[in-house]
Each structure stands twice: as structure tokens, then as C-alpha cells.
Image (cartoon, rainbow, N blue to C red; front, side, top):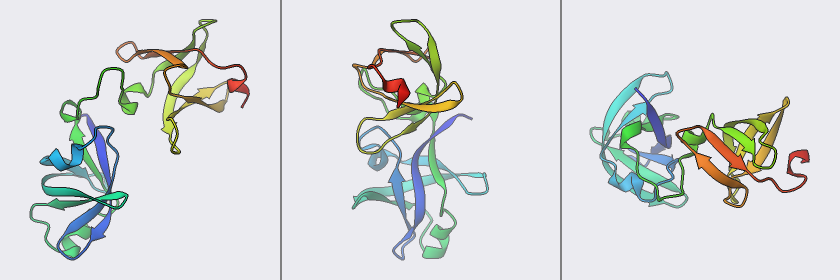
Length: 170
């Protein structure tokens, strides 16, 4: 079953079975509207959960699952992932993309038509997201912004880029 991560579960919070989580979703307000999900535990097993509530707390989220009412109950979920089925993930506006959909896309230089590599992952440091490409045996970071990433074809697994001079030498 194809699933995507919507939050990383860090640890219990408080003494009522709540969990501190980091949102991994690109869809605003996704966690408070989520009623059911799967948790992939640290051992790789999956467990369905009903979500009673979710609310922001500082830079994190607090989640409360049905039937998890103590610190020891919640501790079972430490270091786990909260996941939803691919078809249940939220919707993005036109021109926005899920990073997970772009992993594996070929990145092609607009000017030369040359393949530069494949998107292997993402890095984010407060600015625009950076695509991680493996190119000629080294990692290259390319900003995922409209002036550079001019054509994105999710179905065709291709991103056409117009790179600024010298970007590949960084």
C-alpha cells in the first residue's frame, strides 16, 4: 500500500497520552482535519489510529489518538511516522507539487537538452527548497523556484531547468 508521511512522532507530551509531532505535510491545516491515519512504528509494523485532536504547540504539533491515554501508551509511538494513503493526501494549488512526487524526476537543461541527473531528495533551510541531484558522481543542489524550474511534468517524471551561470560549479 502506498502511503506518505504527514508527521514525524517525536515523543509523549504531557500525561494524557498526547504526542509531540513535527508536520511533514505541505498542505496547510492538514493535521487538524485528519481523523484517521496509519502509524509506522520504529520496528516497521503499521497500526491504524483514530485521531481525536491535533493542535499547534510552538513549532510542533500535539496529537491525541483515541485509546491512548497515558504516557506509557504514547511511548509506543516514539520515533514513528504518521502516514496516510497516497489517495488521501491533501490537495495543492495549481503550480505546487508534493516533493515526494518529484523524487525520481529527470532534471534536463533547457538550453542543451542534456540530462543533469535525477532528483534524489530535498534539503530545506528556510529559503526555497533545494533539489538534491546526483550528477557525475557528486551531489548538486538546485533551487526549486519558477525562474529555474520552468517546466514540471509530474506524470512524465521530468523537470526542465534554466540554470544560472556557475550554479553547477558550486
